[in-house]
Image 1 (tube, rainbow, N blue to C red):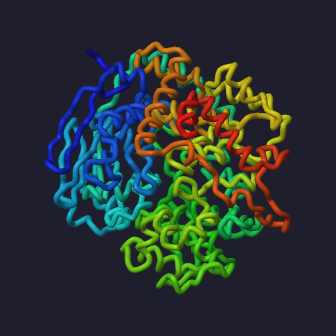
Image 2: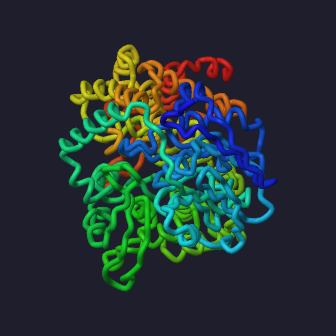
Image 3: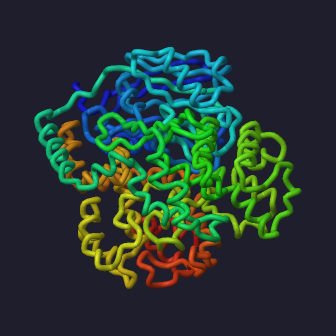
Length: 633
């Protein structure tokens, strides 16, 4: 039987025995769960044994590629990693990009399931429908960039793609990550530690296989229509110039919190030390994923000054602001410090958000007189030297730094329960989106109900852009329709004295992200804007031959979320874990000295704990998960 869109094979790898097994993909399951994120969830349900420790050899790592990958669909390059994460014990997914998803299919596989622990460090090598284990003893101890470069050099001419971990993953730091081709993060929550616990240093894939397309003529017509829309995208030139930085004006509103989310980093200072002009002062080579018409990854080189010639590759230059503003790293004399710090963390494989969040928390507690710095054997100051000392010590798990290597849970257990109310965490994962700055949109709210904790996967909603007024509510309806919410759902969402119900809207933001990630499509705002549920259905049909309705796609998202929810419920997670951090109910000090309080998205109404509880209940109601609320009560 000819398979369209899919390669039709799932690779099973047992690192304990070195045994490989290739099984056929069940097409009925593919139709029901789509692929990528969705099929990963089903495979996790079939493979995972409840109660398995995240760092046990039995904890599976499942990698998956969607059916649209390799077909020329714009931005269809997402690789999905599903596992139980050690930072907080949740079962969920992480999403990466670059070339790995294409090469996984190029090697002949849609998904791979990895279990066991190798007796010595290994690399899994994929190609031509086969898999091998390579000795990685010489790579163990190298950073991610060194590992990736060495593997690509040994496989030159094959356009290989590499998922690699650094020393922090080898030493099982619970917030260690992997990187894909040095440019895309993969595994917030500790995928690096899970790989390290398996003695798995890296995975390299290459291959020229491509999925067959059911209706090439129809696909060509659909893609032609997308290209015509791209020509009318008036912001495309700016995106090509600046990548992620084209959204700078919005990001500095959303990510300006500092001093443990108690104050706001001044916007003018941010632009002077970290903004687009600083970015333009570098030599920039833009990197893109296969089939992407808006490349957004950066290869950067410092052109002048004492660090002239310094080079790095990064998901985005904006990352340097995310860590730099917390510790005031950049100055008028040196605007490269934060970029060099980001490079260091990426090479070690440390999640910069968790690393920066924990140290900012500790330094702020010391500055406010709430913590004796003598409780730690390393300095707690806001400077580059301090960050480098901590990065190396956490990676090596030396002394008191080993407490931070255990994540927020370990840190708060050491400090004592009196510090928990000041910690910027949800589900033992650090907050990313701060609603006191921009109001409670889906990205801010979804951190509460996300199975994994704070992340950025509900950004496809109308509230992605902060600061809109209620005059835009008609556009919200159109946006929700494009995302796939049906008319009755949109009516429920918009039936709110606050303009819209963010709890109910979040369900559809998550579902939209889920459909895109299951098909293999990037959720970046300047990519997903060209997609709609209707277009996804047509592309899915043209590529696979599966004739499905819009409602079928909606039900696939429901099926996927129900599957993941069931897995996490089996580990003891429930509505009691879906609660905001206490700091959200304390005023922040704005850049003008005025207090900033938790308000709805439009800034009309102050929100209290009861309001958030009701929104969480509305979210559960919209998902059809009332039984979980009843069981909790």
